[in-house]
Image (cartoon, rainbow, N blue to C red; front, side, top):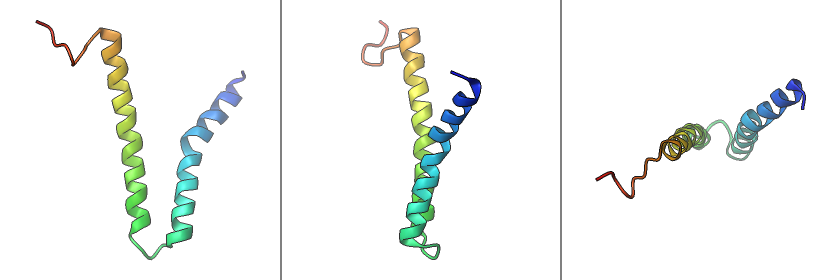
Length: 72
């Protein structure tokens, strides 16, 4: 796989969902209402929070940290 293809796939997966969500929100609800802005803020928050959560889960698995069974 070429590096150009990797960059293209990354951009599509990272930015195109935001463009589609924003387009659909503003197309249906318009610019005059507050709802599209709040929904886009929630979408950005969910994306950031889910990345941090996934990172912490991977860190815990790598280092053998289990919350269910704390060390004795």
